Image 1 (cartoon, rainbow, N blue to C red):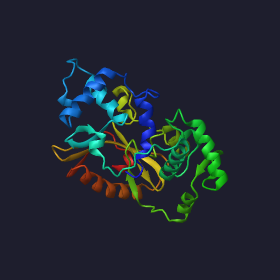
Image 2: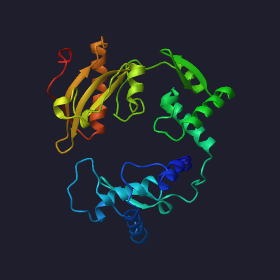
Image 3: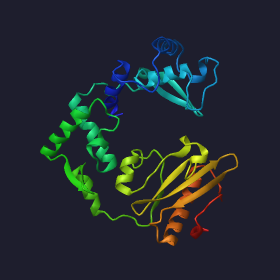
Image 4: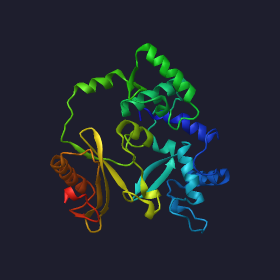
Length: 295
């Protein structure tokens, strides 16, 4: 909530049609949905009548699209959830009155984006820091130069390319890395969300294949990358079946660079126990292909 006001520039752009969201905008429907929630209180998408047409999995009905626009432009927030259903309400009825609503200046906003990106990712190129910031690339580039000049940032070279970093990030290199710790990552983790960056820094070519037709998938439907010893070393296609409390691992694909198979297996086994519990499962079942040296 401390940083809430830094969400306002993008919301302002969407509301004023400077920037588009994913769907075509229907102002009449948006106003109708907003009016209902103003008068009736918090509502879910299912509280609105659909158009009767069957939609593909990735499509949203018009009323749901209107709710999404109201959320993205700042008029609505999610006040709660009922199972998987979002409950929408007016922003002023959700936020505490002490939250800062002051619109940041362009310079403040640019500086905020740079610092938050580098704090989350450790280092970044201009193209990575300005990812999805089509309207602010020039300003961010100018702000980077100013922050370098003032000593707030430093430039480093990685594989022949120039990256920016916060000075305190390099201090982390003095801390020892737990060599045995292994982490199963979400496909949307900061480390992975920019696929090109992941490939350049780690040599790990990752694709979320649930959007790829079945016959063309290489590793599986919903593959989770595995981080071990500071490197991305494997991919696991899995599914948590909560009704039966079974965690199914359809396949495990390990990079050729992994030489210490026993250490990796031990680290994976330890993390799988915690991951299985987190997903509400009590047992693990392996299916389909497992690399021969892990059988």
